[in-house]
Amino acid sequence: MATGDDVSAIIIDAGSGFVRAGYAGEDCPRAVFPSAVGRVPNAPASASASAPTPANPAAASVESGGDTSAAPSASSFSPYLVGESRVYAWRENMQIQSPFSNGIVTDWDALEAIWEYTYSDRLGVSANEHPLLVTEAAWSTRDVREKLIEIAFEKFRVPAFYIAKAPVLAAYTAGRPTALVIDSGAEMTSVVPVVDGFVIKKAIQKQNVAGNAVSNFARALLEANNIPVVPHYMVKKKLPVDAGHGSNPENRPPVPGTTKSFHDFATHRVLTEFKETVCQISEYNFHQQSLAMKPVKPFEFPDGYNCSFGLERFRIPEMLFNPSVNPAFSDTLVTGLHQMILSSLSACDADVRANVFQNVVITGGNSLIPGFVDRLNNTMSQNVGIRHRLYTPASQAERKYATWIGGSILASLGNFHQMWVSAAEYAEKGVAVEKRLP
Image (tube, rainbow, N blue to C red; front, side, top):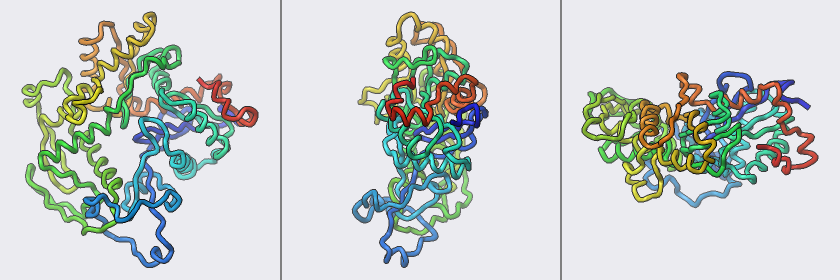
């Protein structure tokens, strides 16, 4: 049997926003690509031979939802399209979908396509030659874990397999087997206590106030200020304009066949660029008058519209700490990050709270928003009556890829070969072998 001692293991960390993959023992993943996948309906043979592919796509049909007929069945779709060059490129009637919901796999065929793309297109290796370690959300279920094991051994014929929980790996990256892991990614924000390498399940706190929700809030505010978010694929050529003036782009002519899911996906890509360039979180509680005095930041949209943003750039990410600033969450039960931390600590046994709170590990793409760490530190000092210590690596890559790096560290340890589930064990016990995984 090939184990982690014989050849390098493959680490795949598939999240709701991006997939990260590479070899155990390396500092960073070799491949990072969107986890969203595309699907194009198969045209009838008579139609496909005569219908040309438009050269200049646009989103005229998006206004009506992008669907001109009844949705085709799953069997009438082409194979999944995976990777930046495939999902970012316009294709007629292409639907964009995510294999995940609330951090849990819901589309197993899409996940198989992602793994296949990772092996063949990005890493260029055979799955049956390398042990595979994959990550999972702390709240993943036994059914999901059993399905992962089945796919790994039955479909990909891996020699050995392991499933590790994302917060545990993030804690390993920080060198802290006991920690409070705060992870704010694309779809979920979670607070998970880890004690001696094990998740305290009863203390898990999670909610969907995360990157996607912030993007949706940004889009709503921009459109309320008459700033349309025009995605890249709709712009043929942009012309320079003065700051604050309306754009004057040369757009592509309207072509039907643009689905709403693709248009929203392309728009979300622009909003992500906007967040990364402009947004900032106030170090203290949101105070409109003082933040209005802060320097503005400019941003140029794909269609050439150039505008400077002041108070809005603070208001948008504020919802991570105060969800009520977003009207979409004003009548819901979601809470601020500090309340999630308090609830998680309260659910921990009293004898571990102080140790857990002395090792607060921050990870996830939203933690890279300027001001996030300072605001979290100040919020915890004001609202939690226990001394704390934040672990925030200076390297953005380490914070962004903490889960993958933890998997790389774990799978490269000399004694980890005892932890792998081997193909022989699976042949003997089937998916029941899941019970010996932590």
